[in-house]
Length: 167
Image (cartoon, rainbow, N blue to C red):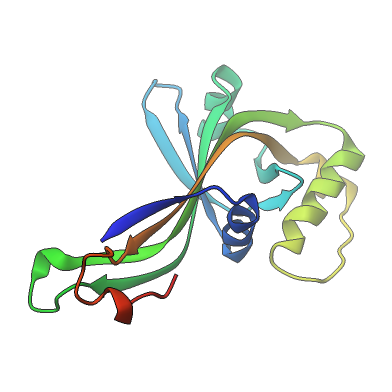
């Protein structure tokens, strides 16, 4: 099985759009790795996230705003030979983004970010109360680098290659 790096940016956007959560990695206040699943929105190379005003992640990001955000889609178990355990592997696609969190403070920009996030999950329009907007912490991550891969693809030398070309 192989992993293939993908250069076409529109494929990264497609993978991101298929997701309902992402995994956000950071260095926490104890200088240790910290990863959390989060809801998100994505628009024009910016990932929007939200949280409470305070907490471990916010405190960590105030000290060190660097994050790595991962998306994974279309996963399924595959194999080259169903009798050989080590030939089993997950196939799927992934996007890994790096950037820095900037906390959005402007009320109108926070509303726009909330709309972008809700668009990830529904086509409904929403209104937000002033306390709701004021009490949420909006994270804005402009993508600085992005890597897209398809993994678990049968190797061309595999005898089952022609039967398993699903990507």
